[in-house]
Each structure stands twice: as C-alpha cells, then as structure tokens.
Length: 120
Length: 238
Image (cartoon, rainbow over all chains, first blue to last red; front, top):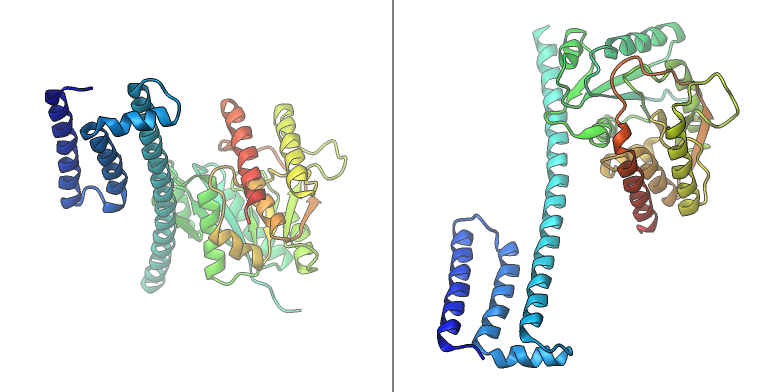
C-alpha cells in the first residue's frame, strides 16, 4: 500500500494536470471534444490513486499479479487511444485544408478571370 | 447529336519547360480538327516559372495556393469541370507524354455510352515500338493490375495511366471523392465498385519531355504498399 504522503503528491500532480487542461480549454487552446479524453484518463488515474483497493481488484480480475503492471498497461492503453484520436484529428484536418485550398484556388482564379475581362 | 462540353484537365507542377508546348499543340489540334476541347491547367503550387508562363500566354488555369500533390490537383480540375457543367473531362499530362490526337479515341466509348471511364492504355495489345516505361515499373503495374482483378474482378492492363476520360457521373464522383496520394488505380477500384464501366483503349505515349515523374525510384516500395492497401480499403467500402 502506498503511504499517505505519496498519495497526496500523486493526487496533487493529477489535479494540477486537470487544472492545466481546464485552463487551456478556457483559453480556447483545447476544444472540449479533445479535452474529454484527457479528463477521463486523469479521473480514472485519480480514483486508482485515492482507492488503491480498486486497482488491486481490477488487477486480480484480469489475472495479473502486480498492480504496477496493470497500471502500466492501463497507461499505455490511454496513450494509445490519445494517439489514435490525434491521428484521426490530423487526417480530418488535412482533408479540410485540402478542401479549403481547392475552393479558394478555384474562387481566386474565377475572380482573376473576371478582372482580366474588365480590364480589356 | 448535341454538342458536348469537353475539358482537358492538365495538372502541372514545375512544368515550365513543356506546358506552353502542350497548350499550343492542343490549340493547334482544335483548329485543324474543328474540335472544341477546353483546357484547364491546375498549377499545383509550382516553384518555377510555370505560373508566369500561364499568365503571359493567357492559358486558362487555376493556381493552387498550396501544393496539394497530384491527387488534390487533379481533383481541383474535376471540381472545376463539375461546377462548369462539362460533359466529359480528360486527364492530360502537361509534360508531353500524352498525345492530343488520341483524345478522340478515348472519348469515343463515352460518347457511345459504352463506358463511364476510359483509360488510355499502353498495354492493351501487343505493340512493341510504343513507349511502355521501365521494366521495374511494369512489374509494379502488373502487381497493381493483379490486385484490381482480385478486388473487383476486372482486368485493367494499365491502371496507372494518367491519360483518362470520364463522363458526367464520374466527374461528379471524383469532384467529391478522389484519392490524394496515388490516385489512378485507387479511383479505378472505386469506380468499378460503384458499378460504373471502365474501358481501355490503346494509345501511344511519348517519353516525358521535361519535368519529373511523380513516382520516384526510392519511394517505390512505399508506393506499392500504399496503393495496395488503399485499393483494398476502397474495395470493402460500402
């Protein structure tokens, strides 16, 4: 079992990450949609820190011996999910940017054509 | 028979050496044969004097404000064709590889309504003096051809040919949905999956007069993997 001091430090660290993310959301630097996945991961970690018994229960549930191993697996899973969602976001944005470039370029050339005709 | 609106989509990336030549040949052809092929050059953010040449010679063109790569550039042409209500759009290279005199041949199946997409193919029949690209690339083409047959049941002999004509249905399809990276084979799978018809007609191609192929030697392995996966995904799309 972890000591009270360690528990406090862990909870304060997790809390400060939550506060930091909330701060970014407030400043419009992270949209809620993408902040939610961070909140979810952080809250799960927070629960495990506050009540290590739950962590132990989950560990034995999936047949693992060490809680720390389970924690690592869980963290890697969170990072996986976050990475995959980042890939999705980047791909979506690439698509949107391509569309924008095409539309603007077509509009641009139409406008230039019109101007060219007026000047003649 | 009603007059069809026909446009040649010419993607150009750093084609200062031959774009004007290509344009003149088309205009010449139009005059001599009384054809009415419109032209739209899509300048894909060229870094050389391509834009200058296009402007100076009043060649109709769209200047992409950022480089999009061949797929994005050609798609811009299809969007233009769609917006301007063209009946037939033809993909045509700016580097002198394609010969304007074959355009009549490749749009014929579309006018007959026997195909929706026609590929100007180098390999349909045995013909030895035709420029058929390098040995390594032909192996690649055969592999792609094999996978298209596997995924769709249709044998396409020259799936990477960039010399293609499409009808109005396909213009609309491509304007809304066109693969970005290595578009030809993938778009053919998507056309076949939508139950449209593809035909190949034999054309002769020249070696490129200038510019670079969009397929570089060291990227070949990546190209094959990318195209194969893309075609597979396209074939399982609903």
